[in-house]
Amino acid sequence: MKNWIILSLLLTTLGCSQTPKVKHFSAQTLTNKAPTTFMHDGGWCWYQDPRAIIHQDKLIIGGISGQSGDIRVSVFDLKNNKIIGETVLDAAFEVDDHNAPVFYMRPDNRLVATWATHGKEKVHYYRISAPNDFLAWQSIQIHQHPFDKPKSSYWGGVTYMNLYTIEKQQRLYNFFRLGMDLNPYFSYSSNQGETWQGFTHFLQDDVAGKHRPYVKYSQITPNTIGVNFTDAHPRDYGNSLYYASFNGASFYRADGSKIKSLADGPLITKEAELIYQGSSLRKKPTGYGSMPNSAWTIDMETDQNKRPYLGYSVYLKDNDIRYRLAQWTGEKWLDREIAHAGSYLYKKESSYSGLLALDPTNPANIAISTDVNPTTGEHLKGQHEIYLATVAEFDDKNSIKWQPLTKNSRYRNIRPIIVAGHGYKVLMWMKGPFNHFQDYKTNIVGYVIGQPKKRQQ
Image 1: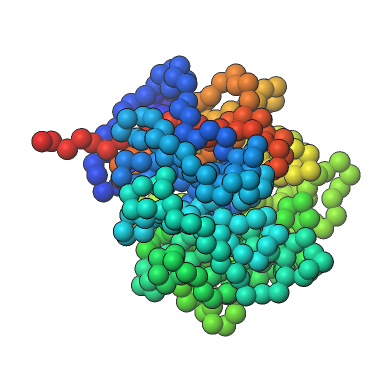
Image 2: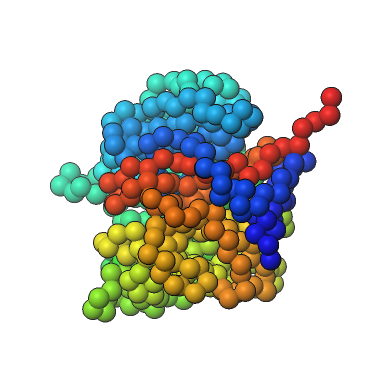
């Protein structure tokens, strides 16, 4: 298949309210054009969302400086292809990629941003923008979560902000991890993020010992939130991977059958649908940085039929991580390996891959970051590069045609995301030196890969 066909497939099916204008780019055209810088000096982890949104022909990105620890917002003009401005929400907050801000766009065109430290405090911070001006913000507000943090413990606070809605309840949810038991909890706002209330245990791990589920959330419908999670950290346990959906009151399987009501307590990991069975190992073999056959969540989207797609990684051994894709066909889960993810980003977190991104308008379109040949696993002795492919139901690792979007890079290209809205679609990632979650110097770069069709006058 020709390179331009693969890339044009990534541009199709925008699935937005406006009719998309599809441009057919060849790989040569894209790789000959330098990626656009959407944010200077910004980075993020992958367990807080939405990190970027599109609104009023603007791409709004949140990140945290790897140099100063500033909580940052960049606004990019998609019509005129330029950064309008960058502003600081919270100066010198902390250099830690776990602290990146996330967003919610209110009906009055004001943006809500929330962020928190990496488990150090029992608070989350938030600001609300001026209407239609995402570089002008009201003062910082602080929400105190109602629990007692041990004074002697560094941990015990909240981390990983995630903003999603249940429209029928008129609630904006903030899902986060609590450091006390390392489980997911939530608070909510009934007034569009002006104030917050509640404190509810959402997921509960069932692995003996002190373990922490890692969760990705997705807005499936205005009244349904998808939840994809592990039962522990792959450094400590041979993780399995699970799925459920949540409607504000109860949990459900992909086929719509009810699992349990939240009123009966948090969802225990093993009560959800099992997607991938990990090794369940508790002791690492010699020479392994994580547990063999341990899964980790990366991304989740739904297709036009609101069926979930889950992109995740599996650690086999040091410098041999694999990407997998699980999709609900309407009758069953179809799960398979799709690519070699290659090497870890640093030794201590040997399950940290370059990550992948699913197209929110067609999750069969996938971007991955890897430093090896995605099909064969051959080490290319270079940096992590971005590859694209469209993965059909009948595809497996050997039949997928991965096409390189970046080549011969000086620095790593990692942690891609794809953002869509109002006819636009943008692929972006972190590019630059990345040594550790508190040691990086990256910009957010990428390509605008879809634009709305111009209306006739």
